[in-house]
Image (cartoon, rainbow over all chains, first blue to last red; front, side, top):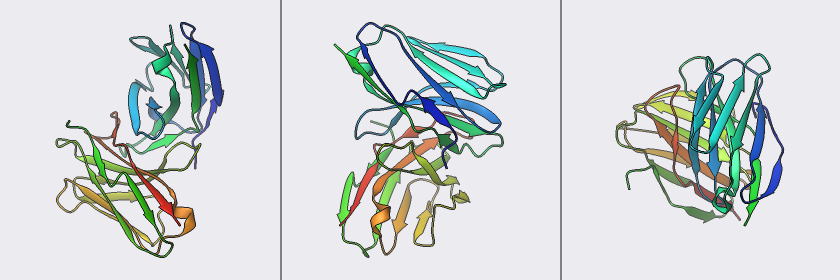
Length: 112
Length: 113
């Protein structure tokens, strides 16, 4: 079963604008990860934030984690047409299985 | 390219047939995961291996599904007596351990006629 929900389900913006996606989850976690998926392809790992971290940056990506609200957000700044893809959050539950529970994803379209 | 590779990329078969997919993980990764993804949904966990040991199987994995990783390197996922509901993208991922990023292959898309 899916861990939680992502919001919005779809997002359309102009190149250069920022895109924010939100993710909620239900259980305690070791970490939360964000992945990107281009149509018909596998998932590409973007960023991992551990349960004791609140914010993390990687290039144009900024991820926040609020474990008290069981929520996370992914911000993509200065978006490019190449950022068009589906974005998924995934939680790695407590324990050492590494089993990821994914949300339903946000489809991002960046218009040139 | 030393990423995760999956074969075949596409498989079309008739209902009731058996199919087998292969995954070659990144060579130094001891963890290997299988997920299933249907259109418009996120991937769902099926099973995972630590080296050659299968440590967990999802309830989604019915008796018709079996996975192996005989030498702790490549893995196979077999579906026996395929059903319409098995149509999906089957994704393989590998990692260096729990609590680590996973590296995904491009998947095998299964279509049941």
